[in-house]
Amino acid sequence: MRTTVDLNRRRDTGKINSSPVSAMPPIIRLQHRCEHNITIPVYDKDNDTVRCRWAESSKSECGGVCRSFPNSFLDEKRCEISYTAKIKTGWYAVAIQIEDFSPLNSTHALSSVSLQFLVNVFSSDKPCQNKPKFIMPTRLDGACVGIPINSTWTEQIIARSGADGVKITEITTVSPPGLTTSALHSYSNSNREWYVDATWTPKPSQTGANPFCYTASDSDS
Image (tube, rainbow, N blue to C red; front, side):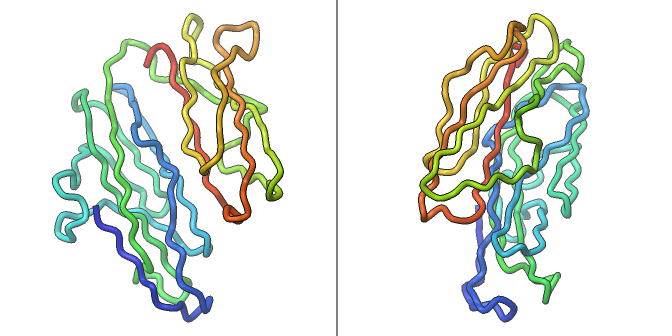
């Protein structure tokens, strides 16, 4: 993994650049014989343009896992991978470079941050659409929450399984330091809806945007 940063003071902001960050889960599970979209959550404190690209062996960025996720397509501007899981089941490594560009130069990256995660393609006879979904009042993807420093924020994250007889088994998070989640609880009389309480008291050092992402798993894997 190779990360590069430019520590010179920027001409447009007069400050040293802040590199983009991601809150990507370390493992993604995808069902075989289904179409999938993997969104890479990225954020840049300077509001620069952020793009994602495949890591390249010619630049010594990814060792032996360069381009090792066959049959996938990366939308560099949206940082989204589309994937048709029809080759074979098993584990795949994905190596991405996340780069930010200033308004003054859209071709020279200010920094290039490495991101690597694993994809597990598993076999199942269940319909492709039977995967867990988050339901209201869980906030929509991309929501921004304002939290005053030293105040405590608490919200429920609620997931619903895709079929009767299937239970939510886990809600996992990639979160700022200090954010905690409770044990899994039943949300309604239906065995399909489950939730965790997320709680966070941000410190003064955490002023600014802090990415927070979550995923749900069910008893069908």
